[in-house]
Structures are given as structure tokens and as C-alpha cells.
Length: 545
Image (cartoon, rainbow, N blue to C red; front, top):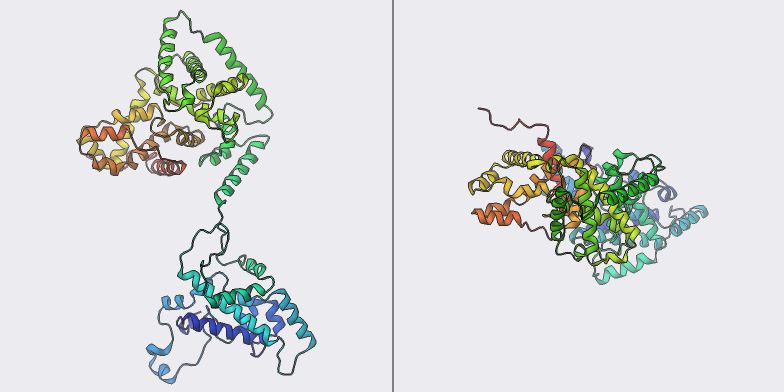
């Protein structure tokens, strides 16, 4: 290898490379050159050509040659010696060795191979020529066309052409058009090119397609389908797969399983669903009475009745009376069943993602949810959506119920934790907020109470909850790091505000209306990094007195 590097040639201009390549290919194929192997062997195995060739080949180091006496004596190579002096020069001199299609001139179509084999069997003249000159010229032209196309690809930026896997220039000169016409006349050239892309040990040409994301989406659906169709669901595998997002068509059943509303056993799921839905119907019948004489229940219902119409006022779906009545029943029954906390403002926002997901399951994919008329949906379907939303909400709130008990101690603790965390991660941002009198409780209380549902578009909240439901140890701790990453995301804009009013207006009206799943994925990745760094090391950055 050292010898090859030492004697590697300098990179030659394109015309020289392609002409030399054409001559080399023509000589080898025509049999006029002693390559150390028969033409039949050359056709059968490309590696024979490379191994036994004694001549210079584009993209390969030149073979050994005797050095001039003065070089041997002095050990110095002149500037015009044509030899490389550094590894970078050597690397450049063989850069085209990895170009896709650089070995195409070694591939001869099946028709040409058959003709060559016939000529060899018939026995050509005594001069050893076994392939006609016309065939060798065709192969030589193919070499020139191949390297011209390779150089053209290096000199022009690649574009996402959804209709082709090969990226070429949109315009061709007249000589290139002639070469293209001759190339098309060669049979099976496309097949030969496709075989080249599958060589092991070399970079693979990845097909650029307009449907690449759709293909990835379909692949993920298949993975979910395999898991969900198994007789005994692997809940750990489902959480791992769901953490990065759940496809829309698989989300409803996945959320039921991740919430532990449904059992892992597929045989028991339908029975459990029917039992749970009937149980919710009984709760409605027994507990939801608007004309109740209980003063506490009346206060609870009155507050719910005030809050529900305020939910998503910009979306017509949530202003329909049928939808508001469904939300009132879900929230009222949950409050009655959880007397330690009761109903707290903000819980009404937490019903919305479940309601939307289960409504999407009942409708066709192209339905406009924002303007959908719930009265057109069968009453049985509406009852199913309401019951599933109730039970999933109940499971979801189990790990954060201390957020809604008296004085909401859980939220106060998390706000203080967020303050300490930001102080450790970014002391400049922390000092900026403190200098201008901004208390963390003033803006992050809503983040903890509503789980960022007021800060993010609804579809982003649903994507965020894919990960929350997939968190193995509950999402309460992880949500803290999501809030930290969310605050740090706006650092640049916050540092530009130099008064309390500007900071509070920004923090209460963060510009997330254009956010998509991509921004949520980045936010979750940053939150995971922060959790991995700080969750198990609460003291390692504290200043020692």
C-alpha cells in the first residue's frame, strides 16, 4: 500500500482521464494488450481486469515504475515529476474510484458477452484479437460517457428529482447527446447499472423519491400492526415504538393500551371495552344530575359549565352544544370520583386530546374535524367516544393528581424545580428573568397545570402526548424537562426584552401557531437530553460554600 501511495499519479484533467480510460478499455476488450488473462475471463470476472492490468486506469494508483537515477540518488522529486507528495494529493488522485458507476466500462452487456464468447469459441486470428474493433470502440465510448457523466455530477449540485434515481444535468451539449444516443443503443445497460449499485463495500446510491416519507410512515404502521396483532402485547415494545410518535390510524388503540385502559391480552380486549363503556353509562345515570341538591356538586357543575365554552373558542367543533355536554359529563363524573382534588380549572383542556383522537378513529381520514357536525354521528358512537375519553383521562391523571389537590402543591413543587433547573442550565437567562422581576410561577404555572395545551396547537399537543403516554415511569418528571427545553427554546427572544411587560407578553403568547411535529420532535429530544444529564445528578452543579 505504501508503494502505491508513493508512486500514485497526480490527478489529470478530465479529457486525459477519459481518453486514457477509453484507450485502456478498448485495448483490453479488443485483446491487443497482454493483460495476463484471457478475454473470456475478463468478461466473466471484472476483478481480473483490475488485478492483472499493467496500465494506468482512472481512479487507481499507477503501477510501479523505475525512478530516474537522479531521483534515486537524491531522493527528491521535481515539481514536474507527476508524483504525489502528500496523502491528500493521493486521495484526490483516486477520488473518482468511489464515484457511482465508475466501473461501468468493465460491464459488457449480455449481447456483447455472447458475441465475445462466440468469437472466442470460433478462434480468432493468430494475433489474439477475439472481439471486433467495432465492439471495442463501443465500449470505449461507453467509458468516455461514464466519466463525463461522473465529472458532471461532481461539478453540479444535486437536486431532488422525484422521477429518477440518477441525477444528471438538465442540459447536454451536442457531443454528450451523441454519446447518450450510443449508450441507449447498448442492450441491458440499465440492468447493468442497477447491479453496480448493489456491490458490497461501496457507497450505495439511495433512490430519491417523493414518497420517501410515506414509505417510512407505512413501515412504522407495519411495526405497530405486528405488535397490536400479537396475542399478548409487549407493552415495553409498544412504549418504545410510540415514544417517537404514533401514526394517526394506530393512535386510538395505542393510546388505550398505553393508558392501560385495555389489557395486553387480545382475547380480553373486547370484553373489557364493553364492560368499561357500560360502566361509564351507569356512572352517568347514577351521578350526573344537574338538579342535584348537593351544594358541592352544584358548585362543581357551575364551574365546569363556565369553563367548557371557553375551551378552544376558535374551533367551531367545541362550540357545539352536543360536544360541550359530553365534556361536562366527563369532567363532572371525574370530579365526583376524585373528591381529594375535585374539579380544577385546566383539567377541561386535558380531555380535548383524547376526545379528538377517538373522534378521528370514528371518521374518515379526510374529514374536517374543526367544522364537523357531531349531530350527524350516531348516538352509540358518541357514547363510545365519551366513555373512552373518560377512562383514558382518569388513567392519565393518576400520576399527576397531586397537581390538583388543595393548594395544588404538586404544581408549586414543579415550578420550583423548573426554576432550579434553568438556573443550573442557563444562568444568564435565569438572571435576566430575575432582574426584570419575572417570577417562574407567573408563566410556568399554566404550563404545569394545562400540560402546555394552551401554548401549543392541538395537533402538536397530540404528538407530545404520544411520548407522554409512552414514558415508562410516568410523564410527570419528563414534563418538567419538556418545560425547561421549551423555555430555553425562546431564550434569544427573551433576552431581547428589557422590561417586565415585554417578557410577560412574550411568555404568555409564545408564537407556536406554525409549529408542526418536527418542532415537537426537536423539543422532546432536547428534553430527553436534559433529563439524561440532570435527573440523576441533582447536586453536581451546586456551588459549594
